[in-house]
Image 1 (cartoon, rainbow, N blue to C red):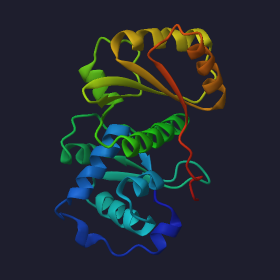
Image 2 (image 1 turned 60 degrees about the vertical axis):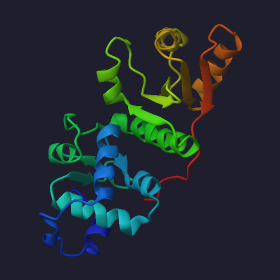
Image 3 (image 1 turned 180 degrees about the horizontal axis):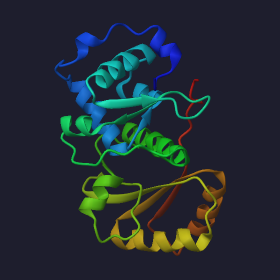
Image 4 (image 1 turned 120 degrees about the vertical axis):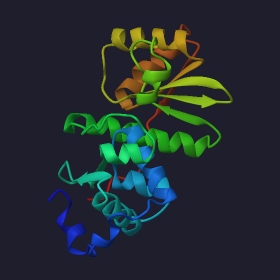
Amino acid sequence: MESRPDIEESRPDAKHCRGEVLRHRDLMVLKWLGEQYAARVDHLEALIGRGKRTVHDMLWRLRDAGHVRTRQILVGERMWATPTSAGLRACGLNYREMIPRSMNLAHIAAVNDVRLHVQRQRPAGVWVCERQVAIEYPRVGPLPDAVFLLEGHPVAIEVELTPRAAGISKTKLDKLERSFDGALYYCAPVPYRRLSALKETGRHPKLQVRELPKRGAPRP
């Protein structure tokens, strides 16, 4: 059984959920999951503005209908949800089903946090996920983690968690600046310092550097 025991112990009989018509919020969550590859329960709580019970009830229904998979992947973290092929089709996405590897989870979680933060700060903007960027901007080269459209201006969004070699970051930054109206980096402490120093040289006028959004530690 993929789900956490504490969830299953209080789970109601969900057989009646099979064949249930999807709700508007279900479709919104499925689309968000498909665009972001996966999400933890706390991301979904922030997304729909509801608590643990509401999100778990929704995931039970979606899982029983065959639209999501749920599992606790890392010890001490909350449950993750990923959309199935059926879930992707149900919300109108043509992406391929993907099960994220544990090594990618920190980056996926950080991008989720950044998306929640950016769309809360700029609700009029449009977030274009990496999977859609690959379709709409096929000649960019190394893809940004997302593109944010604000008043028609595309800004590349990058999330940096590791202290990569300066040359690697600069090479990608050069390409992003040629393709987009801006390059906005959200960074962990070490890459934040390095990219801030790069910005101070004045050679990258489109570069903006921000610290990662601060959120509470996910509850186990």
